Image (cartoon, rainbow, N blue to C red; front, side):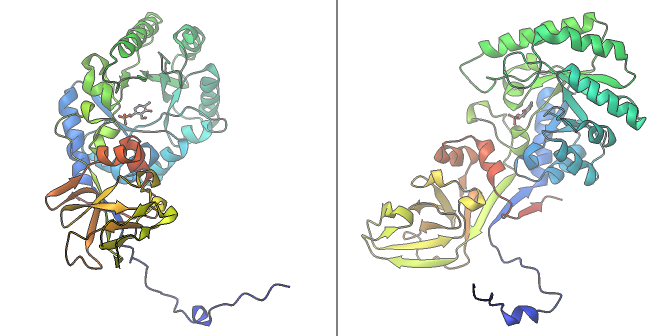
Length: 396
Ligand SMILES: Cc1ncc(COP(=O)(O)O)c(C=O)c1O
């Protein structure tokens, strides 16, 4: 028999109103006024005739979907885009009442909730239309706006141009009774491939043909849209009635070459020194002993690791800012902790601020740099900052 579990008797006597635990010094700060500023930069770029569908999927690219949604709505976005039905429901429950487009299609069982929450699904099959129409009838609801997605070359979501006819037949026969064809959209596969204009040009030509076919059926979707952030920056002809930026609104781009001038990074990530180690030259540091100290060193323990979304793949490349100066991360990044070489900054103490992303004093580490160290794209960095890093909102 296993021995009884040894309960800590003190736990039984803990007062009911124990103080909240807010000691973790590692935080992601999100400036909502910067989100609003970025929306204004985008709005100015596309001009007043073009609407903005602000993409807040994946928890607003890690910034917090609800907070980002509120900031973009207040700054004049036409609506918000999410990937999942659940993400749309989260926005509704947080009191977001404006248009929410669900990019990820209509999974089996989703139609009733889409109708109930008045979420605008992206559709690409007669099956989708039938499921939604039946749900509208069941609910006795008004016609639900939908956005038809055409796969012009991404080979992911959407229907091929050659398969348009049965879908258009269905929509024409419904005549707006249960579903309203509000939007028609496509997505460009190579908008951020700076050397490739041809693929996008082909996709846009195909999209143009499809719009012609749709118009010829007498259907008049008000919102034609094709541009993510990179397409919005590179191809004015891809703006149509609405653009769908995500990463631009958070202050970045898939790569520096397609960044819209004037954007500002909305997120910064900070920690505080947890401890200082004085270690002699020759000592090996962290898992695998991969880093060997070349000099007597002072290493700061920084309570951040891949469990927080600071990728292990950056081991050997990463730097952080202390007092505005760059310091090298030494050895393997572990789940909870990194070791930072502060030998050249005399007197660094427990509790001093360390910046992983963003500005500190005269120094700055941007998203492209972090993504480069990790061998990934900026999106994966912000989306990857994990739940155990509290988000702190500034900016009103
Ligand atoms: C269909 C669609 N539109 C727009 C976006 C926004 O892309 P970006 O963040 O590159 O602007 C995405 C994001 O992946 C998407 O899937």
